[in-house]
Length: 267
Image 1 (cartoon, rainbow, N blue to C red):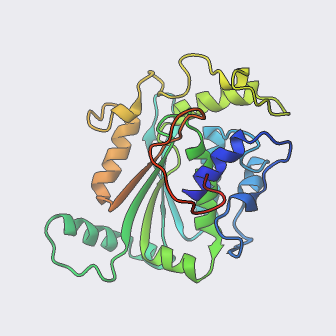
Image 2 (cartoon, rainbow, N blue to C red):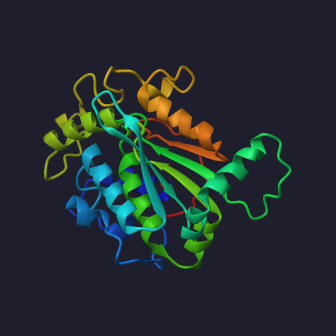
Image 3 (cartoon, one colour):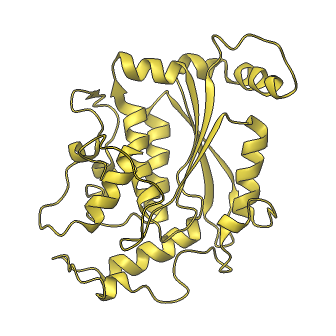
């Protein structure tokens, strides 16, 4: 969540200074495994310089899955435009070695099992940018995936030992690609702060919807679209304790809630 909010801030910051990877990461004292590729090493830029396209997003997720024993990757199908519907399972190597039993034990809880949960990891499903033109979700997914794949230390070990993370970097691949293409084509090297600049005036139909201009945030119950079908199947296969759906507020919109000051990177 910190990475998502910090990324949105960086995308809209009117500065000529490119962001650095350390700007986004939650704890400056955390060390990172140098054997795991950073987003910049794969994309060619630090996230925040450009909007990530879906093809580059999936490229980076595949690289992480090859390099990290904390990650497995599966393709659950394709969109109408043929883009993969990837799911990363992120947890400790020890949990991966026993993942089928962990899944079975977790599902049994939904069927009334009285098994002890004391040593059972929780299951968290994290999904990003179901509206493709709310891009900070999928762009932050680059950073969060890197943090989970490469972060070192007791805190990270505890997190991964106690959690199975189902990680969907793009709920709406076709919309994300459409939006990123538009913005990257029309943005200036020197960022223009004018909200009426062409960069911020995406042509209809925009990237909010999927290939057929369907708002997939309205398809959680009908489940008519391949993206939704993959997502809901994953949900029922795991019955996660928590599901997060990372959206983005408009720059001139009011906030849903007001919170006390927590962190300098959380406005």
